[in-house]
Image (cartoon, rainbow, N blue to C red; front, side):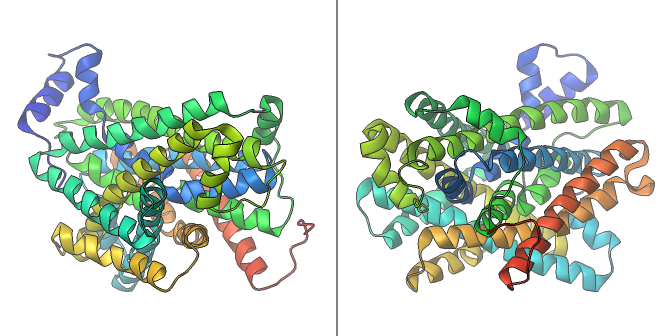
Length: 429
């Protein structure tokens, strides 16, 4: 899995040995973080970001910013793990934890993979059904076929896959850049929303946890370590340091773009819906109301980005699911079987008539609850001298990653308390 072509591998070796220089040769290292960044722009983000912007204006932008910074840190740690050990997070978990822990981790990761696929599938299907006037079920079938067709490209080496996913990321990014020029944004309020934490009521809390669940993705944390493990065969620590340096730059750039897209989604929903239509909570409603409010171009770009997001993140989700299953169980599954397993819940949800956007938001809450598992495992492994050697993370990174995991855990506990009707002192509503 995730093979590089011989040409790319030779090129990377040339850069590491100092024979090749210049920015074009450095592009050979780009790819893994771009693929992982798709998870941060998936349809689950659309659902939670629309609800955040429409219901609370710019108030919850700080959550998006915080989630993105946590994501950057954990993706960088995941990449480091793959580069240094040559193994992915699931394999290291299987080798180092007791059997019962491994089984529990695998089960939680599978539930997370299904929740992820539910979001991605529904997003692509909603976009297609709105664009072409199809039933939602037909949109899901088309999404399934297109996703599988793209996955077939993996057999030609990993570079074509990276380029296809990169093109989808470009469509999403450009669509939202254009939206920013169309929407009437209150930039001062947006800036304030990014630096002033606050949760107006318990519904805002559910959305905040959903945003974190939609942003920091369990499967992306597993996937990044796997994408890096076969990236280049580092001959020594000097090579590893170079690869790590390139990787960290790519993580910051790729996730900064993903973060800007998410911030743009909330800003678009806030500027278009918050004043007159704060009740807009569904992707379909958002699309229908964008046309009269911001014009057909804005509504069209919204759909184009949603379809690109659904298809690309579904491809990435399947790749991650396959890696998780192989890593934990040492069990190889054909990609079409993997595709089928994670697709079934999405078809069941639509078949029984559950509200699509509500299912999207709840899937993100499930992801947020599954998230601490890979986060904690990653902190444990990257802090162990026997696993990381000289690349073990220092005290500053350990503290920051610990605080990130703690923030996610704390929000989860508050969400569960709210769900079971227990009083939460600092919420007014």
